[in-house]
Image (cartoon, rainbow, N blue to C red; front, side, top):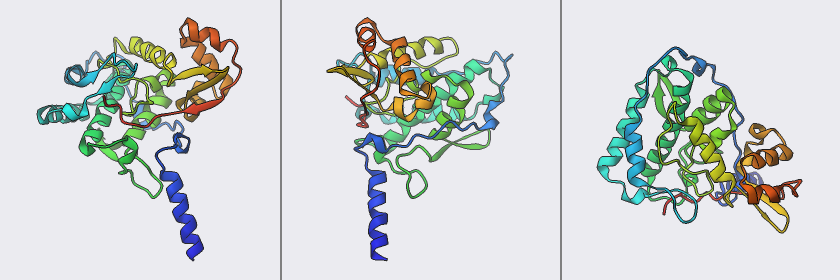
Length: 277
């Protein structure tokens, strides 16, 4: 009995260790058919201006590190309430009545705004992975907690990313849009996603990330890439070679030239530290 307890404890410690990105198991895309409903003839526009004002006030875009940072510690009680009210308004929207472009922007903004609220509700915290509020023995972080109710359905962060955004749109650039409040994550964009600007922001997010060392770098002929390309390899073609092809698509000339001589990925890396200044 004692041997079983020690083994079980060791397993728990292994699975909950936050310092090793390789222990993070990403869910596969698993379509929630309920959210396929949409109205392509709809002209309804979702108002994301409150989210835009929040980002304008607290996001440090153009940080010298190349990583956009959020000033969590400076957010006022009034602006926390404004963020909560924005999320309340999004939950009151009939998402199924929107067209596809509005829906895509809606889910991305919802994910990012909710992530920041979760961090703020537990701030100060060194990493989002330290917010262990997901249900289940082996769950880490907040991603499986059902924070929202949309059209009568309880929804979690993982639901938004892995059961809605990924399987419905099948656009691997979504990984450059949803932000997990970590330094290793692609940049939180300084403006809300809208039906009109989503394509531009996805392209910008991809180029910013791929051409930053946390996305891809070559040292001594060895290619190190973000663990995102390992966790979600299925979205990037299903193999290391397909990931490298994806990197070449968005790489600027210096990196693109270096990638010509690379045929494999040597290692993966990710920094879960909070994306604060």
